Length: 450
Image 1 (tube, rainbow, N blue to C red):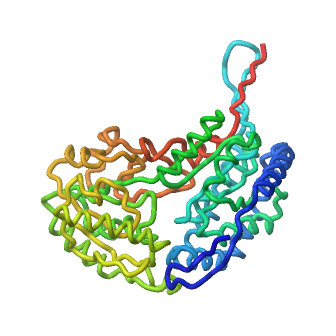
Image 2: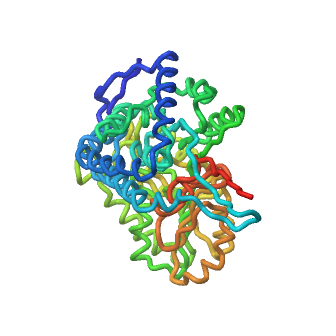
Image 3: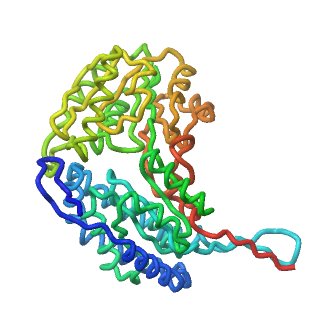
């Protein structure tokens, strides 16, 4: 039995019991049974359910957003935006899924050759708390449209949001077993992966969790897709338009109170404009409103748990002990941590060398683009990088130098249904979204006719 507590005011929200091993097996068997009939439907038939799901999302939007905000502290306007984004993903695949999954005829020896895309069966999703709806949707919707069924082990501190997701699919009329909430503890995941019913696994989460899940899947020769976070750099070149760049930089670091895999976590600013940038940036950060996440005016809420705020506090304090200077912020109150900007930072300090999953950011000057690229790549992660400049062609010619899954020019790194999403190095492997994402959990079957 475990309880969920509101991180804003520590009030009790709900109590839950993890499923027993017997319950888990029954759920897996049910999902496996459904997979045979669901996979036999045409793509058009499956997409009809997605149309209904969009209506269910619209109907449940307020409840879903409120539950998310209460459970993990996301400011309410951002919670509403997250649900809206789930609808955009559904609409994207409604428009494109049939084209992505259609048979591909190939010229080869023989009278006919083509490739089909067939579902694998039951796919396990292991999902995080920071975007409790969007992260699930970007995994589950493409997999389900492709003909798979999914079981989702969600983060325990958003168990209420997880339950709402299952109810959403039921409300939309999906056959029982297409989407199932698997309320289990972390130490139960390996046993689920070991079950032969599970054909593949997708995880979004920490590097430690990803290593564990990928190892378990590999031991059973099962495919896995991993998105393990990042330490994205945001580079401000000497010719950048600061009036445009600064507001985007603030959003890129501080939305969702800094708790985002693709947040800009290390700022690199050309030395010739460093002071001007800092003046504008700190002024913008100081104007961010912290407080009750249910207040629509709030932009910075509490972190999802007190221990997460304590970890950010430690990374900042340890960096200060090594010589970093706090330009603004630096204080913690329970799960709240002030939006914090640090200067005089070196690459060996925790706020630069580690992923900081909260509202703190180091700002480091550079003199040449080559230096900026080297600093950007000086991390084990490789999810994305943002570069701000008016000379777009110059950066386009150097895209290959960045060791990242994505390069965004004059924009913050973001996930978009139309763009493949994922990283390299310790940020994981595989891709979600776009055509790549819907083909991650299919059998690409070659057919050759002599």
